Amino acid sequence: MNDHTHFLAELRRRGAVEIRRVVFRHNRTRLLSISKDRVTLNAHACFLSAPPEVLDAVARFVTADPRTAAHRRAVAALRAWPGVEAGLSAARAERPARSPARAAESSGSPEQRSFLRELYARLNASRFGGRLPGELPIRVSHRMARRLGQVRFAGESVSGRAAGAARGGAAPGPGAAAPAAGERRIQEIALSADLFLEGNDRELLDTMLHEMSHVEAFLLHGHRGHGAIWRTVARRVECEARACTRKRVRRRPRGTRAPGRVPANLL
Image (cartoon, rainbow, N blue to C red; front, side, top):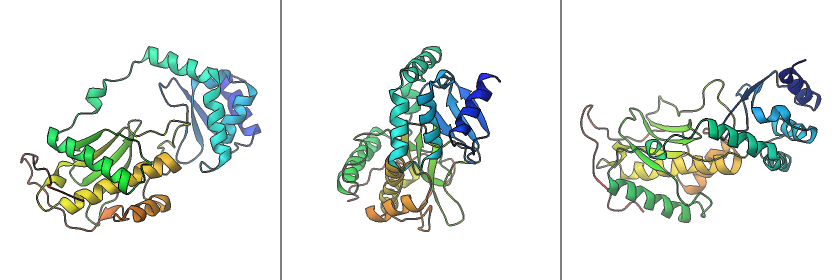
């Protein structure tokens, strides 16, 4: 029996019977994630040398409801194991991170970016009780053809808001990973440049609230998409609790420049 087979057998012996396959990776930040069909566990290679008590925590991470204290204890136990930091450090040394400046590219003007940062801070205080991170990268995109906004974490799109009743959000596709152990973090909020067109001010505010609701639902509850948890947050902060808005949104003609306009006041 090789190390991979032994690891899987130990997990199943501890109750993780739904797992049929384990894929080991030398990730820089992600420790554990589960495929959408719940049968594949993606694990950091450091866990190949994990002692029995850490294997216990891995099994609890797989089997426990993410909303429970048991799951939180499993995450804490995993992150407390010295082998985790050693494994992550080795992966980071081998593959340095991409330039943050490249990830934060935005087509919006400095005034628009400043406006969005201030709007985020004011909404975080007034609608979200300061529960969200104090600052997040907020990008203005001129390439969104149908979506009005989206949230990204760890490089993967987890939510998207589109205009029109016929389209849905950018929910994870087949095989998309669940949140990694202890690694719930937001990479960016991105908003369509079209939201700065005259006549779209209400939709700009609603879309920001929509995406910030995704941030709360994910960071506080591990919830993705437009399910019951996200809808509860959206209703509480008073934005349209739908994946797809039915409101009419102005769009630029193809090939025209992104607007440089900044709304006078949204609140």
